Length: 253
Picture 1 (tube, rainbow, N blue to C red):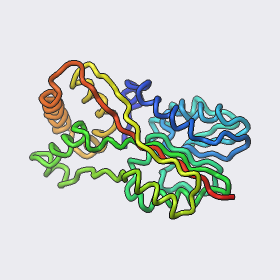
Picture 2 (tube, rainbow, N blue to C red):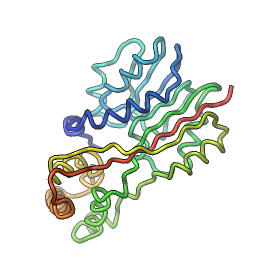
Picture 3 (cartoon, helix red, strand yellow):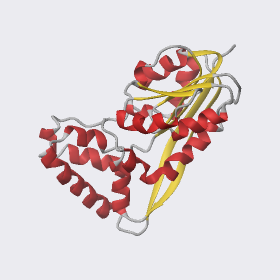
Picture 4 (cartoon, helix red, strand yellow):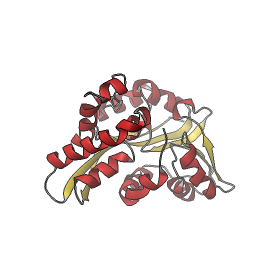
């Protein structure tokens, strides 16, 4: 997907707060082999490397636009590679992913595969948005299923692969995971108005739709989306309770 780093960073402080909570779940040790899945522009991956002294950290992302920014942060113990999350291979002491795997389908298959790459004594630590039932997301699907967008998209819409916290816990336990930590957390964001909410999702959830729509329909889609958000959230400011899922598990030694 064609990510826009500048647009994504519009809400950088709000997007980085869950990273801090995920980092608290990481067992801090030295000399680890670490991969950060979906590293984006690399700033948070650099913080992860600083948190794990003596470790070798690689950040992977499928976006060339994001990686162009990230490369400026590379150093001997921190490098970046263009790769898809579902194609990651090798063995790792820590697989870390902040707000990325919700873009990958079939978590029933993905999570066990990621855990299989963990070394004995190693850890899988993941945070992902789980607010797909919020109107900011469900309205997108409603519009996508209306004409002329339905025809232009070939009936396509994005169905979230995100599971319940119970399902993630069961998946990790079935793989032999120990020291399980699985929870949801609401991050309360207060936005200026409904247009600010539309701007938020234009940097994330709307991207795959804009990627598929012809140029002459992109602005029309976005204008209808903004209008419906204004109708849904007429009060000022807009309270946006952003829900996120966290899970962490260790592989037995």
